[in-house]
Image 1: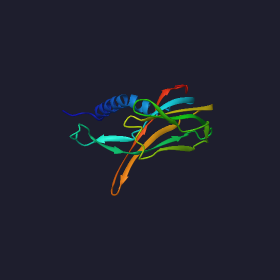
Image 2 (image 1 turned 90 degrees about the vertical axis):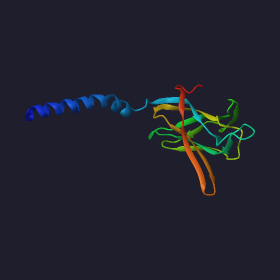
Image 3 (image 1 turned 90 degrees about the horizontal axis):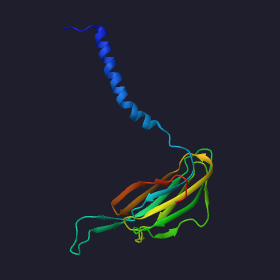
Image 4 (image 1 turned 45 degrees about the vertical axis):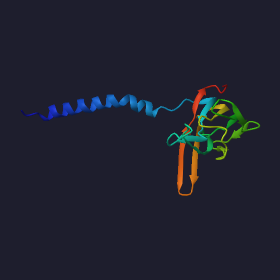
Length: 172
């Protein structure tokens, strides 16, 4: 059986067209820009310690203490944002401290960091930050991440946790 060049061309068009239809939803989702915002409340996970290893004779796993750095990054190239609150909570949901005494402005493309020491045990495995921010203009949403780090001699561990918007209006 021979196939004419037109038949091969039509089959190729059908295969490529079908593949493009399958990829279209993925492409549309990947190319969408997050909506602009004038403020949000953002939950950011923090691991001030992690459990690992086997259960010991007391029925508990080993615990590794970690330092953590919250990074709040203004991704808008034209407008400042104002951090109105940066609260740190423990595993039980109790607020341990407020990291800013008064609203703090973050210039366009600026970053502000907040640090939790390695020796600080009070946060636990379920610690978190609640960050609220606002802007006078509709701006790109900031990026908020924590970087958790352990380093001793030749051994080190590090990982990042990304924030999640829990109130799109900035009022938790």
